[in-house]
Image (cartoon, rainbow, N blue to C red; front, side, top):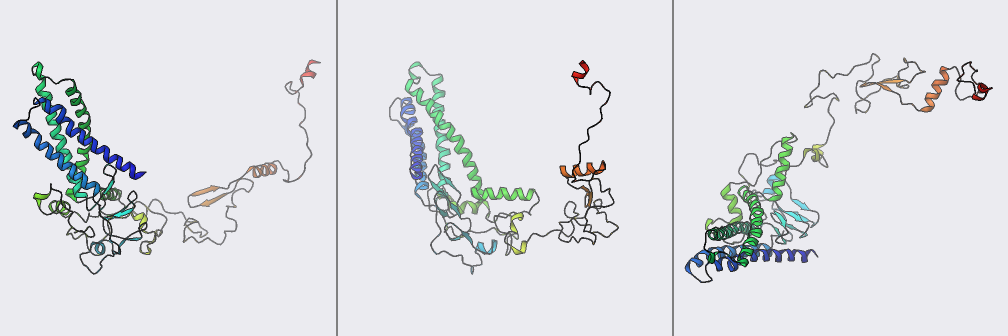
Length: 412
């Protein structure tokens, strides 16, 4: 079902591209030039059709090019000093679903059910993952969509502007007017949405950052802003020129021409910085609150004193009050808590035992919890009666108040 929906979405995208590209030429531009082939018409439409052709070509390559998979029996080469896994993590990444090691920048796609090299995202509009092998085609596809839509809107707008002061026989007819409106309605949202999407990916291309790595950088920036970790430099930003060359190739004249992706997708050049060296923190950086899980070198330990202030120093205004009997000043649940010798009765006996007894704790006095039976027992002791005994009911003596005399007696 998912495959059918994906192919349906791809066909709908092709229909949308075809409608915007050819309905404008057949029903708007061709009648505008009097339905006569001329040099001016060819000069106007030839660049537009070249842009549309490059757009469709790159879209075809994005859809049908495999983004790149991890080769069978692939293992990281630890003997290579330039191998980035050794420098960043000290060990290979492993996919639990595919049950094989993962090269750097590789992620598992749930829709494609495989590990994709340099995975950027899974795009439903192309029914394919965007990864190492087709990311360049994807960038060029966005680029030609922006150019073709801009050229299209310029042509249609020029036709509208010329018809405003034209003679009666040069005004657009009903069919042409309907297609002008339809082209504006379909092309304007495309250039707005795809244009914003293109700016995001062009920025990622300049910084050599995928969509997934952009989320990781945002998470790392949040941890740094909250003071949970120190700043970690992104290791794959090697300069704008080299960032573009790592995706589109080393020849600038072929950046707009569909070319295979450079490299194998199994290893990438790292930035030359003193911050990234043997034993440095890996990318993506992990939350320090999670790093102790299973790591004996980062075990969570309690502080030396329970009285901490701000960054771990002792607050001078929050010192414990010691008893004269030598009781421990630490809370009862502290690992170093040592009870004193008179802990058989933990409640303070200096308080009246007929009342609710209290206990002296690290933060003051604590009222002993009591229920209704304890309340009844204390009441009986106050009136001089031994609890848990049977007693004869003694009614209260009558009073002379008229309020206590029954109504029948008052009437007689």
